[in-house]
Image 1 (cartoon, one colour):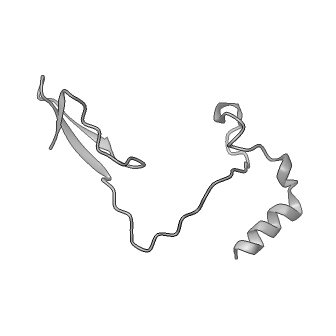
Image 2: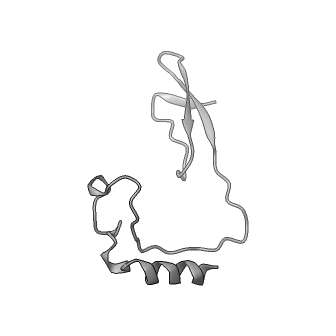
Amino acid sequence: MTHLIICTIFCFVDFFQLPSLNDVPTHLLPTNSMVRFRCMVQDMFDPEFYLGVYEVESLKTGAKCLRSGKYRDLAECGVSHISI
């Protein structure tokens, strides 16, 4: 299946005319445009776990808020917050 997708891209689109995400700032690209990028794909044998959503509480005011843990390695609490 991967070979079919690659062949389709190379056959119908001039691949090197596509803007590269590695070279062009994203704010200069049109919305929903086709782009190319260079990356490394890593196969993981075990599932990856992350905090989907976590709650923090302000030490000063006691206010609570939810934060997203997606695409982060660590939960961010800050100096004036604690995680609940």
